[in-house]
Image (cartoon, rainbow, N blue to C red; front, top):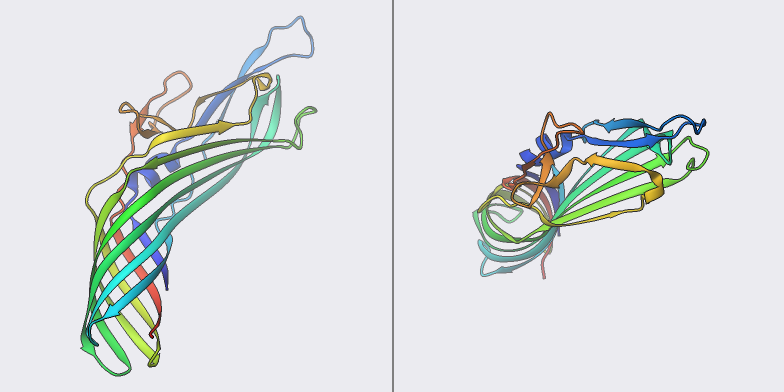
Amino acid sequence: MAFGAHRANLNDLNKGLFKAPLLGKGAIFPDDNEQESTIKTFRFDKDLPESPNGAKAAFELQWHANSRHAIIFGIGSWEKTSIVRELGEVPTQGAVNVVNFERRAKISYSEYSIGWRYAFFDRAKYQIYFRSSFHEVFDIDYREDFVFSYISGSDVAGFRRIQVMEAQTAALFMGQLALGAEWFFRNWFSIGLEAGYLKGERSVQLRNQTFLTDFVARDNIEFSARPYGAASDGNLGYLAPGSDIDNVSYRRMKLNFSGWQVMVRINIYY
């Protein structure tokens, strides 16, 4: 069993999508029916916090040919989450309402791995070793949730509206080189610390977007530009800096999962 952190190089996500705003507008209907409705815009632009390190957990089986050499088979998962909250005004059902807006983002993957370990320093109580491994990363998923909690408004106060976007991408192959140390407390139990670098074969792009919302037509609200949207190639992109309600464009977003990884390993031998 192992747990730790993988610092993936997700610059387009951290510097692009996480900093992109949500833009929209809605009609305001006056109490006096003789007056025409007006359009009110709204904007939520508080950045999602950058979280370079994602949490990783893994389960591994090791076959030891001798005290120095071992073949490793593993399965694991990695996840990174970011949340931001912001107070603002959103025109809904013809009136301006105060909302507590929450934006949540989560990116995750699963992996299979196979590797080789060589203990170049082998003692009864501890080992220092080199490790190389090959990883197939799959189920790369990204999800964003928008939660609008209405604080004011005679018709909507106390209600919530939620939007959910999900996107996925295909498998990715990665290689790792690492150094580690293992301390034996019993001949059947040890704890290890390992640091290495994971290198991906390429960058990937998210696709197969799905979108769900419980806003309805009578809410009279239009989301002119979300932080995410289809780029020119049809894959998921992020809202280009400088975009506004009347000028919306999306840039391509590439995800590179290469980066440093640190793991704590709890080993049981039998």
